[in-house]
Image (cartoon, rainbow, N blue to C red):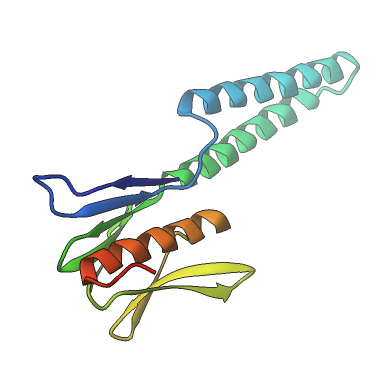
Length: 161
């Protein structure tokens, strides 16, 4: 997901938030885990009724492991990147975390480079490169590259292509 907040009267910088798409809310995740656990325990109860006394124990273990795995996958959707662009600098901050990279906005170049089955979106300046939006879909990376090129052209005073 790409959220663009343009520069306002009091704020001279343009901010772009990059976030992975998330299909479930926290409440929806809890409901999904409860429904899957109920189905597994119901099936295990039927198995125990027919003589498999270990089925409920294994269903309980399986439900806990499934809940932990789904929670971990859902939490991976918390990551995001904030790109701030003003006349002097372009800053990329990875959230949550402490990774922060700053480039002079006049010298930043945006490019899509092939790699690992999909195009990588790279920002480069003065011999340094930084990959951004690795969690985005291919079309979203192309869209971010286009928007960044337009924003950087505006900052650099170049005509748009």
